[in-house]
Length: 83
Image 1: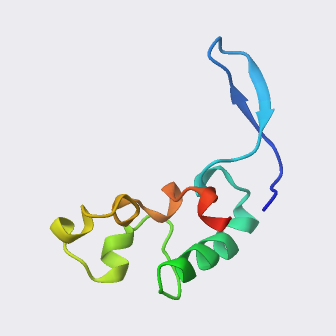
Image 2 (image 1 turned 135 degrees about the vertical axis):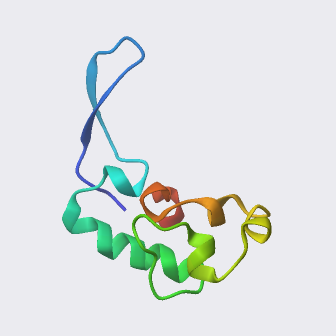
């Protein structure tokens, strides 16, 4: 999916435009739809913005450590999961 470019800083601190990489970099209006699409990949109806995925899935932290994505909060989900 293509989203509106955001302004970021390069290694020299100069601004440049790029595509967002994680949910928190999206416009507010896109966040809900994107989290629903990502949730379907994990077999749930929705992922909350600030809640770790393992809690949504009903897992313990120990169980969640087996999969990197389970430890991420909704806002930290990579947009590469949409591909």
